[in-house]
Image 1 (cartoon, rainbow, N blue to C red):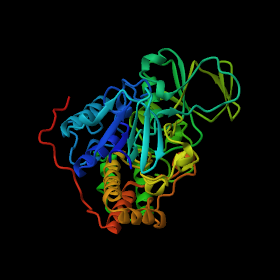
Image 2 (image 1 turned 180 degrees about the vertical axis):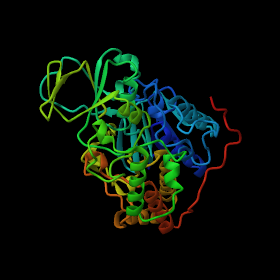
Image 3 (image 1 turned 90 degrees about the vertical axis):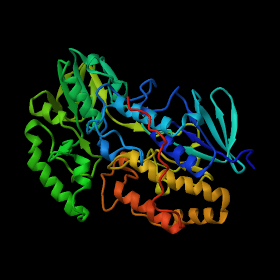
Image 4 (image 1 turned 135 degrees about the horizontal axis):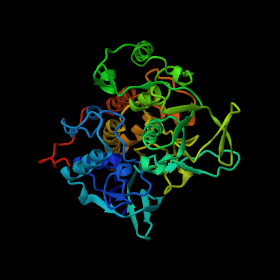
Length: 444
């Protein structure tokens, strides 16, 4: 037996803290391993690998984001800044007294399966045995930079290194990719760069952050419950009315329906596109010294190429053969249960809404699974059989593009329904909540 029945949570970001509160509520001993000196995950800009830039704000709205039972202050903006989000995360940890469980400045070098548990070795050589391991280290830490032919004499870098517009002052800048960080960086660059352009493989539907005066996700959540395809057509028509045809500004026509790629929300990008501040260019073919050559045969010189081209998912401390990889994404049942015993995945999800809200649902399922494994092995065996044999609907009819990023992509509402279905099948409570903190820490 493991010397002590306790769980190890790897990562002190929103996912790890959500799980910590659940285990605390259920009375399950645990420790949190965090490689930095404080909580925050990717929102902690003291981490050199943090991808957060000065102008970063939430993509989901304040009211649709956050820890269950601990809403963001109502006097905050609809889309809070990165600084507000970080203060909120740490206030939550203080309010629920989660700092006492933290092992800060400790990087997990390896986690190896042993009989009835896991042995963790830190970078400084310390070892400890734990019965359960929860991987909550997040998915946006390993930047992907495409390998183009040729040589570029300017600066080639990933968006993860971008912090503010001063870094591109007076330069010709090409941003590659049009995810949410890509549109933000393009918009930032227009303030100081000599010229700003974006390289695209395909067209995208750009959603304004507010629709008829409401945050876009609130508007969608409060809309009548219609069949998915009907909702898709209605919203696509509404966007056409609100935004019009972006093709006149150079945007390629999308080759997919609305919501069949990860949502792209921006007001600023639309503004700058309409004002001629951003040039739309095609896919890159190769580099030729200072020039970027595009697949349509055109070329143009640039001083910087900033790749907003996503991140590899990594769990570097676990033997990769123990993890269910699929084209660079982790795809176990319900995005939680790999085959390895007493191992749970928490922060490796892609969805069309706030991940904060999903972490709460996932954490309760993991907490109940740990409690069952600890005290009711028969129930735990039943759980493993259910998650292996049951086909859960995670998409609600959502059909995503077949890119690597969209492997295992899920619809928020459908995923919640799937987790509640699992709870019912296991006879677990459906609406568990942690007790409120005795006194909420003040927001900074």
